[in-house]
Length: 131
Image (cartoon, rainbow, N blue to C red; front, side, top):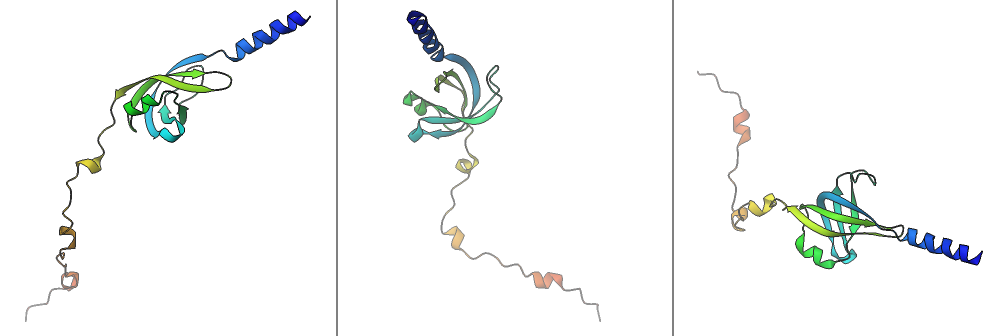
């Protein structure tokens, strides 16, 4: 009887630690180094979950050096009964350069120069009839 219970307990503990693996595609929305997380808008993970935006735990902090918000990525998701984490991260497309980085820098003195005034009150008057 004791042996049967021991085997049952062993089988249960082995089953509880079984790791399921999923290949995931998505776009990085946020990098949370302080929490060891990447927030990713991911596609549907067949047999596991629908597409959504969610944080994923990162065990290897070196992954943060390779990724930035907006990057398209693929990675492997490990799931157990107690935890989940990602590894094998690959950047498939880099984020587009933000528009603000492409704009020319303004001279601070230009913003202080007086702007030409529009005399709207002159435009609004009806034309006078000739005498």
